[in-house]
Length: 158
Image (cartoon, rainbow, N blue to C red; front, side):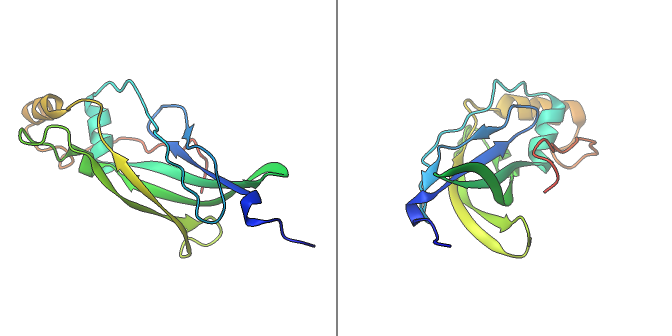
């Protein structure tokens, strides 16, 4: 059986955050896709539970693939992006942009790294007042006290 050309491979990234609908990147083709997508969640009501989730939780990402001739999708891999770096704001830098590279693990073998995606993330507006209010109410820094924040799992077991 002949393999389809590289350009027939189409991928996209699905992103899950808290209780929001799952969002997807643009689709891209080839073995070195460029998604160049802006994904947005909100509006976000910054309750203590949400702030605690950001301190201890993550955004779940899933890499999906399909071919241009067959629209059935296949989960290639998954990754988790820790959110705690989004809390590192200060009066000097009230709304920092954080970035880096996310590595996807294979769905069939978690030890096998199959892809990377570069990202940037930031809040739409500063959350510094909410962080200071949390600290005053709770008497401790965010992420250091007890919490029972459930982890999202809408993408299913991966």
